Length: 282
Image (cartoon, rainbow, N blue to C red; front, side, top):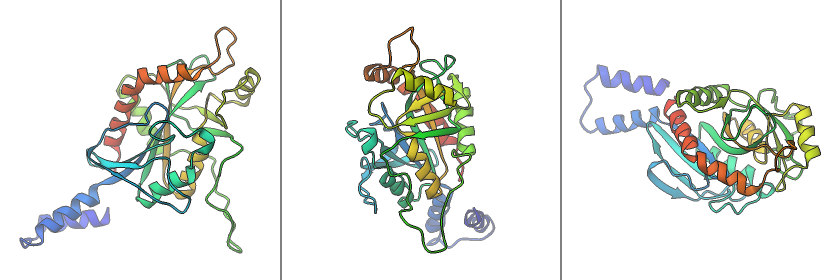
């Protein structure tokens, strides 16, 4: 912001030589532009909402991300889109290389990360097609890399404080955007992430309700943990597609049901992402 304000001051108050004008305009434009990482979850593997799109491959110290990345613009934001499960949804939840995904966003200097995810509802009041903006998570995964820190330097143990794991700034934009668009939104919620790829037993589903979880999915952890460690503000929008397995008055969740409900709401998710990205400030 300091550089941006200085450039504006120079342009307004001084006569700029012709050969420097294009450079200053280019510099100002790039100082005003923020870069946002967007994780496309189930049902949004091929999300393409950009202009001036180009596809890039990124290598990281942790291997390859789940997909190539699309970069482009939305309004004054540069956006980088990654498909969490691969473009054809070929990567099971356990096999998602979360460290490479977050590392790729970090290497591309993303200032924020927005994630989309399908979820099961553990509460009667969270209906199919409702949006939830989680403010807490419970990690029930067992076989994933949970941290970038594989060893500590002597005398420098790192134990991140994660009492509030999601960016309140981004959460506020998601909540406000959903309300603006007339979407059914729950402004808080605890998401429990399970290992998958199987869905819960009825006993597990009831246990998660008892623990205080409101929704369930297979992706937020450790994605949110790693974004936190990388120092990139992160928030997610979860679309409720089913009631998991706790309700005994209906059939338990199936993958076909998840895809069906999500496909019916892809337009709503896309509109919400566009709304929020247009509101993000550098």
